[in-house]
Length: 365
Image (cartoon, rainbow, N blue to C red; front, top):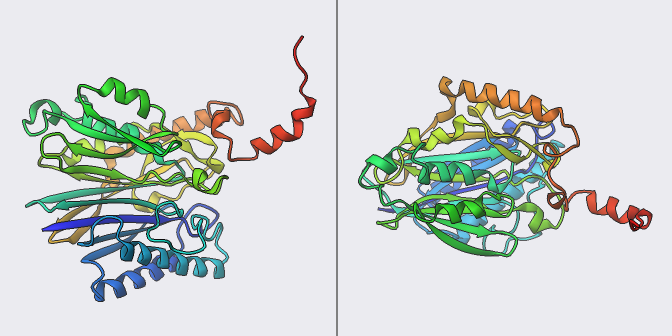
């Protein structure tokens, strides 16, 4: 059967500060999902969280960008925002950048990752959710999963993967996209996705079958709002096994806590720490950035799971290394490379400071 998997998230209020999701918010969202499922809006659903972000996971047969699905998510976020305000949670509704719903939530603040596909005999899906980082955080992991034979041995020895994958890359500053074929165009691909603040992997497809393999949210809040309103805290869906990388190959990139944008006030580089859901509670300097992974099997659209994939003790060394990198980066304080470069600070107070001091600059002789 053809099924659509939609993951829509929003930061609608933190408990305490930006560190956690309040249980009442999660319970309220679960009530909305249960009611909508009973009414037949979707096949199955789950509420999840990563840090202070509320995540709605839904399966249905309405296709991507469906107005009813997106309107439902928007209404859930609006209602939960009101609850967050009544609890005086921090930053209540900070991802809600529009006054009213207008067809779908893209460009309105919430992050969206969706994919429609024909369900396989054994359909394995892993949903990654991040906190305190930006939408480009998936670039290196997706590259390693689908183009790096040192990470994914299936690219070498599995006949059904040997032809490679197609990467769809979005230029979020000019609102355009381009596709690259791996492996023959990986050098060209890396020129762009090596700059994750602007170029982001939106989707990955199997070269032969054309089947979608991965989908990520590329919504960049600062570009939508024109100012800093919080980090993007992106989500990413990856199909696994069969014609796609095995579960172990999908998770392997996160054994290295790569440096990503985000952390305190969205203005710093920090290590991407893979954690169990219960540990997605960033508090040190509002971080370091976290990533969780929920694994599911799909059965006629039913979500069998989740399984908390990063609860595995084999990721303990990555967590330890992330803490060591966090300590090293923090020692830089307000200096680069801990703080983001100036061109990425344009949505903070930097333009105001520059304007105030403009008259004090004099030309060099």
